Image (tube, rainbow, N blue to C red; front, top):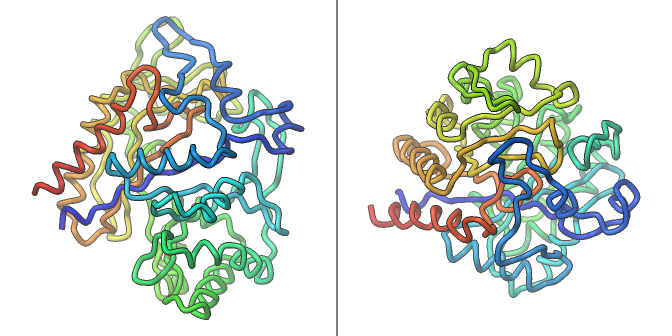
Length: 378
């Protein structure tokens, strides 16, 4: 049924100071620090990108999360996918907003977690610094048991998103888990012990080999995002537009992309036309496990400066076309998971958000509401 389609949005918790960020980047560092320092790289480049009515919020203030939930709910978002950072041996970062949300029953809004199992490097979390800040590690069965025990109060919360009595748990890079069978089996068995029917895994990035493994498919069931923004196939790069700093347009070639695709090696930004890019994206489903993933905008100049990847002409109007086309394709595939993942709710330093901004106000959200209303009227 059309009205069963869920819109879930990634939620970034890096909007409050933590000791580690203070040490790495200076006292009081949050995502807003880079946002406000961003500089335009060419004529007409909209930087810095400023927030709208919620302002430069601090997630230590309970009312902020309450306001976010109310906004999301009123504009058709069905839940947040909180990024969760567990580095092993009990080490976490940016966990406080989710913990505060768990205890704040005024936040009446569905949620689940995405384990962002990736080593933090400075180039992604600060400005022009390639060093390893904190390494992602794995400690086998005991480590996974400890992680599950931490997650259990969240899983048991009535707001936590479940699929057939299985807590939905996203993993960013499933293949990076060295003993993946142990991880999957441990989480699944512990979930059953706690009265669930298992764990429902969703992988952002996953190889076909892992996706079709018996221990994954038979016991748990792993769905996989159609990852739009990094896929050469879905981006149809031969037809994308590359814009140099000299404001000259050139057809991007595969060799140019290969030369510039590594952010560590890039010396100038990769700039694509959003309208043409999303029009070329392949939103068809090649597997019953695939889940649609959409993005309203993207410009990570605030994080990476001249190494940025920028989508020009990303407007609420072009976002609506992208979202509606994706939903239309999903309606043709009723046996696929009836979910659209929105990347993202509030990744401001990546210029990737649907929260109100200073330029368009609530128009990014109004697009979601409009598409949702259209779905419900079918």
